[in-house]
Image 1 (spheres, rainbow, N blue to C red):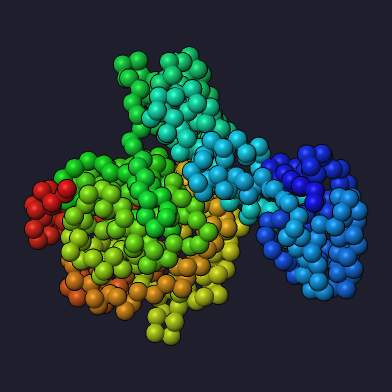
Image 2: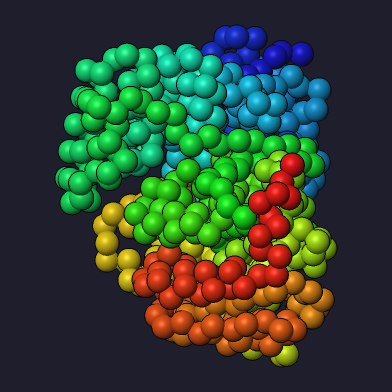
Amino acid sequence: MTAFSLGTFGFPEIHADGRPIKLALRKGLALLVYLAEAKGAVARDVLATQLWPEADRETGLARLRRLLHRVEIALGEPVFETDRTSVRWSPVAELRVDAHLFESACDRGAFEVACQTYRGDFLAGFSPEGSPEFDDWTFFRREALRGRLVHALERLVQDKNAAGDHSAATAHAGRLVELDPLSEVYGRHLIRSLLLSGDRGAAERHHAALTQRLRDELGVAPEAETEALMSPAAAPQAIPTTRYVKGAGVHLAYQTYGSGPLDILVMPGFVSHVERAWEHPASRTFLASLMKLGRLIVFDRRGIGLSDRVGSAPGIDVTAEDIGTVLRAASSRRVVLFGASECGPACVKFAVDDPGRVAGLILFGALAKGCWAEDYPHALRASQYDAWSKHLIAQWGGPVGIEAFAPSLAGDPQARAWWAGLLRAASSPGGISAVLEAFRDADVRDLLPQIAVPTLVLHRRDDKAVRIAAGRDVASRIKGAQFVELDGNDHWFFAGDQQPVLEAIRRFTHALPGRGEGAGARR
């Protein structure tokens, strides 16, 4: 049997025994790629709809039959296994797909191999004319693969600089900047790598180019952290270390900052990125303020940010398990959990399962159930939630949702660019779709009465994303919970007026029983 290889990075290509095959059928190429990605049988009706959405069923199926025949003639042998209802690549055909090789390399941590395999975006410049459903499928697949590339490049920059191979780190950081030229995090990766390699002239050129881009595109100046890199008096310092811990077969990215008698673990919501969280001034200020109260711990859930991308959504039980994995890796024995929005339920679950490790629980803008029910009127109905989710996914990569999440920042070009960049770095449209679907079906109401640790529930009165009634409901179900109603309409805890939030947290943590014992409790 001929060995076929299918190139999907860039314009699709098909080779047989290393020999390129000219297939002058765009829909034929689309068919080969779609079947290869499916890794199994696909219904004929689905294929016909993907490729000829304007045709009636019989016409579409007839066109598919003709296309299958023409493709096999071009390839020189039968490569499809068909029956009356479905089509697949023949299981006896030897087929290599570059996208699958890329993902396999990422899965086993061979990030250099993965980045070498990724020659361009998935099906870049290719579209079978008149097939919008195929184009939509291509978009989601492309974004998922780009997200994995970003993750691999970030890991390589960290690993190469840590190993002293600053030249290689510079090359990988350069690719990150190409992917997102307006990210100061990626710009600093590149500038820092160049400084560590001793090439100050190149670092200055890239600093100037970044400054120009920020001015032209966003109308802002570089942040103080970016400017400090170029100070002649400043020796290049390694970025705060992103560590990894393996739990349940998945590597989780986490960071710790500062010290103190308490640990405070922050989970910000449905997306996160442990490095990009520090890129926006308001987010950085809030997190730095928490460091005055204790040692800060941040981490990315599985499938999100710098943690391993996985094929399933991180549900509440799994996320609670990940919390425990990170706390053990950070040698934390007593922690205050700060769970915002969609991460509140996972913090609730962990507080119920492991109360001996939890000094206190803080829920901000959280709700106990993902969607409406007759006995829970505080959330969107499932149909409304799905419509909102669909809109979010369709606009992924731009500053989608910022008007609801942070009205006070919605008009700020720098905030909009940061949020858009964080979304792209944190997940892909397909990946976040599964996350949002899992939260829609979440329900921790039965766990709330079981919480036995001190609890503080914070909610802004005019929160645009989660109604304050949801916060009141959460607090009413937790015995002894403090409920603090805050002014403002921002859903993000760091947006708007931070001081009332921080002051409420300070009072809560200072009143915790046995607060002074935490400093000596860490191993």
